[in-house]
Length: 359
Image (tube, rainbow, N blue to C red):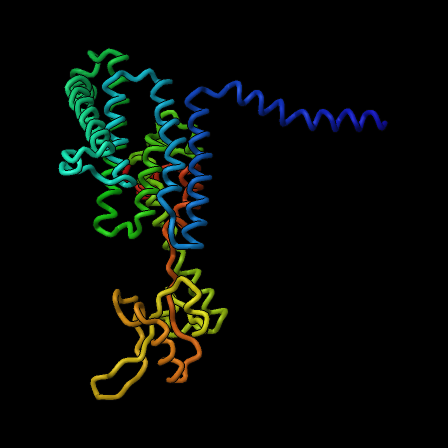
C-alpha cells in the first residue's frame, strides 16, 4: 500500500514536468520570443513601478539596462523571420529615433566639433534613413497592391511577407512618435512614463506571432500593443475615484464630495514626508480678512508647492490638524497592472467597438 502511494506521488510530481516539456517542444521560435518578451516586460515595468512609487524617479540607467534584452529580442525576431536588409535598416531607424529619449539628439555643432558620440549617432540616423527610403520604394508598392482587390492576387507570398514585416516596422515608428508627442503635449507627464512606453513599443512591436492575447476578439487587434497598454493603464484611472470615495467614507471624510472623489485628508505633520500635493493654504480674502482656501487641483508654483512648511504652519495657526491633499500617482503604477488585460484581452479599442456593435 505504501509503495502505491509513493508511486502515485512520483507520477504526480512528474506530471507537471512532462506537461511543461511537451509544451516547450510545441512552442515555435516566435512563441518562445513572445513569452520571453512578456517576462522582460513584467520584470522591467514591475521594477520601474516600484522605483517610481518609492522615489518618484526612474533613472536612465534602469532604461539602459532593460534596453539591452529589448533590442536583443527585437533583432532575434528579425533573424527568425529572415528579414531583408531594408527591413533591418528600417528597424535601425526606429531604434535610432527611440534612442533620443536616453541620449538626446546629435547637433551639427557637436558633429563639427568632433564629438564621437554625435558622429556615430548621426551616421546611425543616415543609415536608418537610407533603409527607410529604400524600403518605401521596394515594399511600399507591394503594400498598396495588397490592399487593392484587383492586384492583391498578383503579389508573391514572399514579397507580401516581407512587405508586411516592413510595415510593422513603420507601425513601431508611429507608436514611438505617438509617445513622443504625448510627452510633449503633457498627455504623459513624466519622462519615465514616455521612456517606458517607448520601450514597450520596441519590446512588443506587433501582435503578429505573439502567443497572446489569450481571449482575442473575432476582429483581431486594431492598434499596436504598446498603445493598447497605455489605454488599459488610462482606463485603470477610472477606478481610482471609486477607491478614494470608499476610503474617505471609511475615514469619515466623505464631504465635501467635490474633494473626496480625488483627494484625502492627512495630518499636517505627515504631509512633508509623503508624495502629495497640498490643496489648502491660508490666503488674504477680498474683504481684507485671512482664511483657509481649498482648491480642486494643485497650482504649479503656488506657495503650497514651493513653501510647504510655511503653509503648514499657517494652517496649524488657523486651528487645522488635517488638510486636503491629493497623492502624486505615478503613471507606471497603472501601467504595470495593465499588462494583465493586455495579455488576456489584447486591444481595448477593438473590444469596445465590438461591444457597441460597430464592427
